Image (cartoon, rainbow over all chains, first blue to last red; front, side):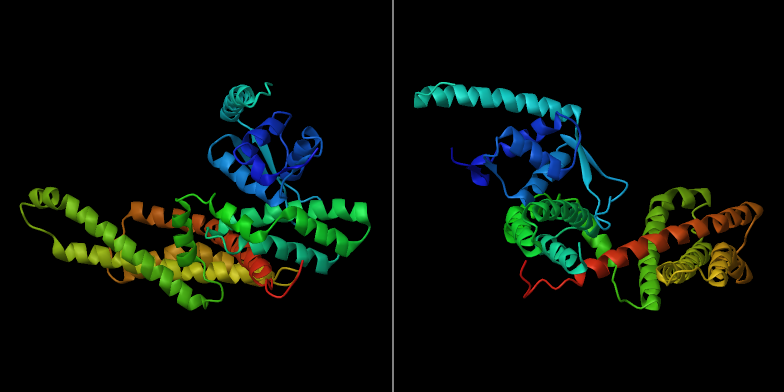
Length: 114
Length: 252
């Protein structure tokens, strides 16, 4: 199966990030690991792009973030830990419902129902 | 990880972050977080490949095109960040002589305070004039405004120098020059009472309430000086660390 590239993820990345955070708070690199694991290694995303998406989610109030207290040997560079907010959970539920509708409608048109 | 690799990873991040038009605090957040990310990726790749330059190349590939990332990051900067950028430009100019910075800040604050006093007087004009039987106390107002502006000016100049001296002590080599710290602490405690005394000698009236306020402020100032010195030290360290990185002609 071909890999899914960043462009194809447009519009869905933020909902997918929220979905990974449902498993618990974590930092950017671990979010990517969770995405990779859930996508069976077929999700190919330029990793830097994760951060603008996280900042948008933070600005929208869907996630909260704070720097770790220690850099744990990364020479002063601390990771930020993201957690899902109540609003983020609602956005995630909405995103899931919209995705279901999209798959049903487009799948029906293409003759490949979900 | 050796120093050269660390610098290469910082360059990778800085290529994306430096062109972003955002306040220093926002940019520093992006830098630190993304540096932690690329360090994590590099360590992963090094473990897999066992080769430093291959790991570095893979890290850059995974991170993506910096110019594309710049555009994406720019899109996340909120409109209110413009105020932060304005404050950064006014407050933080690395390399500016201390005297010039002190006078610039003092004059700027004086202009703001003057406009504030003028606005308050304009609003109260009718009420005060009625209270005083239509007579507007111009001379008293002038003395009051001048005293406040002078006090603010000397306070800001003194405060700026004390914070800068303490910043140099904090940034200096290991070991604390206790005599300097003691002098800065004493200077901080005496700054407000000293200005109050100077104004009193100059003819301003001080009652017991004013005197207590001046003494209380005198006790608060050392904490403010320490805070400002720490903020300045961190800002300057970050500035030196990131803006000195050579972005041209280096391949990651």
